Length: 61
Image (cartoon, rainbow, N blue to C red; front, side):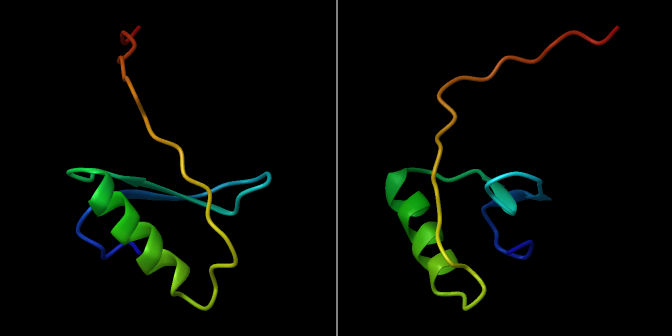
């Protein structure tokens, strides 16, 4: 997944999910294509999608 064009980050995390992908997709169709591609991998058992609706950067100290 780290080689996929639209994937910015692949994070291994603790908790309910094992891996989080941060992607930059042009539209929902592109997001759905990435989800489908991920689900086709044998090691992927299920997916959960969250969309970032807004982002604000914090100030550096």
